[in-house]
Image (cartoon, rainbow, N blue to C red):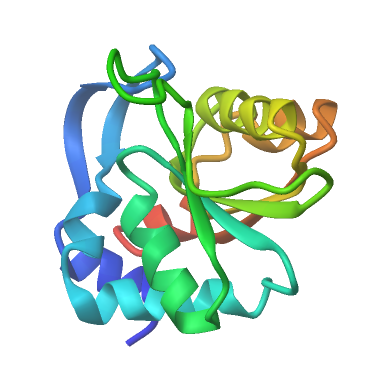
Length: 171
């Protein structure tokens, strides 16, 4: 069974009336969180992403892509960092958990991408910390402008699955 079939079988693809993180409305929703809570599927995602990892550190965005970043770090034995959605009101108040060295290459991972807004924000934060961010690997690209928006920020989008292929399995 391929990754698309595993995601479908997990119940991660739902149909109805949804508002996405981008603010857009959609008649379908992909909750990769449903898939990544299954260790077998999470491992398959990490294995598929691992072939794109070189010497970069891995970064996940709170909350959705953190399990993916952890699984990928375990698969590749590469360290990872977490980008927060907002700084905590206590402690260091950092937006990034983990160590970043100046000019260190970091590859971002994400579960589902629509327009790329949250990924672009995370890349800017990592760059503000001195990192070099060039690539973003996502489980599912909804094909709604993220590739083009990321390109404007000098970010290459690498999708494991394009939504057109995933949804074609329902026809």
